Length: 339
Image 1 (tube, rainbow, N blue to C red):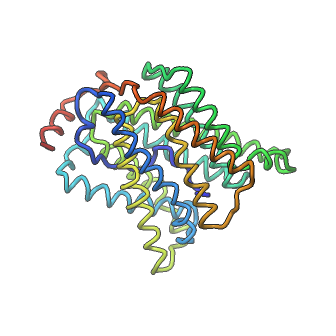
Image 2: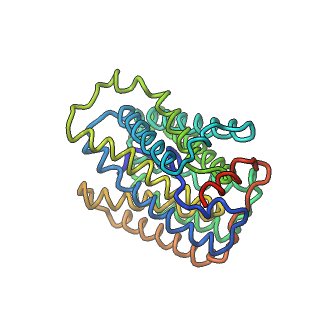
Image 3: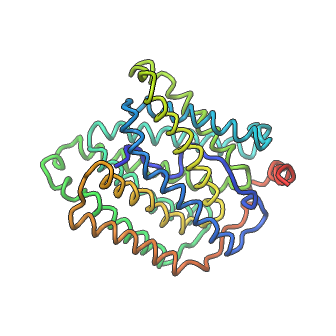
């Protein structure tokens, strides 16, 4: 399974011009599903790249930020959007807050991995869809409805079954204080990353690549000592795998995810976030040879059924409208620049 939770959270670039329009339609929301799912599927394969890179957790994260930052800078340069990296007063606080929260989420995750297994940590970090629903209702005034909430709850049950967390919690390890400290760290980290998701939704009026660039830049600044203390990877194939973490699993994957996120209500985002762990579990099975038991396979099927049901029932959901409290001259200028 992947060692890193990916709830919308490191770096991204916007690749769809229509995400900057003043209103969203049901067809716009439907168009957000495909890029979000594709980006999540890419993230599901990240475990292979982390395994092949053979680098420490913090070192791999720093390289991911560094190469992601390079990719995003090139993307913004190609689209002639570098000028938007200069933040206005109305957006600077939100952008920096999202970046700091994400880095704190990583720190909590890495600390939790010293106390609980990586598999349990990933499962607990994917408690964030419930946080996304709650924060979306409180901060954005969105109402996902009973069916959406039920679908998220069922998908979370499937996730728990698919990873075998119940068996691990029932073991002797589950009675240790350090185990539950790690659990608490994961739950707090999941809340922080869910907050980043909601902030990204509030900032959808600005080019998504700008938010992603700042997130990656903060990650580089905070973790710059990691390679020096943990050791630089040997020159060769490892650098290629690490570069892919930034260029493929950061810039490209989150380009797709943020593009889809800008068109989707938080209720649908909360459900679709389960695509990532589902793909990660299947990759873990096929690539690493970790066979799924009957309960685990049932969990994957439950997740898939919940996502299908929610999308089938919610295909007519209204997509979000632009948040007027965050409007600034920048989005208008950006639309004109893209035409």
